[in-house]
Length: 330
Image (tube, rainbow, N blue to C red; front, side, top):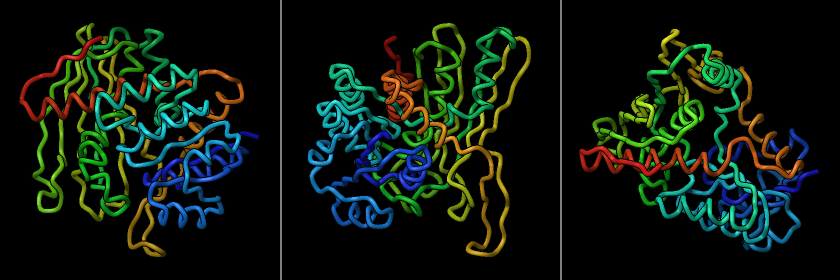
């Protein structure tokens, strides 16, 4: 049985991951959070021991940790886990800066520690089938991608997402990385140029970060991808987000919408809402994390995958601020 620690409970996904870890047979040994009151309350709610000292938790003979702190704190926690020789699953985006991203990956590689980025969309069967169709040449040469990740501004779940110091940005940092990762994975190469525009027309009276953005990502082969990464849904909208991707190729087009499976509920504990009924991609991701620990191998979604996707988000913020494209080193 894998022994797992939780480092940070700021990210809303942590409430799902605790269920996923236990469903997979892992023992959740303890939780640490820089906010002791928040961490202790979360631990009591989920019957997990709270550790005010992160190093004390890391000495509890752990096999792995799941990092769900605010993005600003990812680097320090991953570096501590790497020094303790503990495998890491880190929420996306990896860090708030290029320096943090590089440091997170370097710390794990130098320590010989497994680092996985939390990209559950990768595990959806429809997305995996799309990857298979493109990699086998079934669609012919790829020409372009068009992706959307639009949602409610996450103030009702976790307000820190709209704090540029803690999150590194707004909608661009939150919503570019999932689609950037899928496109990078399909392309099998790193992007070379990012051009973006953003604005704060929606919710300008509430936050100071960008709430809408459109990004163009170019690859060495000439293929490009557009990503709409906006928090442009009404605050009463019934879902956190929705990812969709279209691939345009010589042999045709394919549209994937992996978050579409849902029931519509009226009344009960909500006036109106969507209840997902499809596959739990979080569970598939947690299963892979634990399998990689047991089999002493790198996970199928690595820290370097997270690094590449986060570079796109950071370049988009830079481009939107300057009005110029940003060129990425390969």
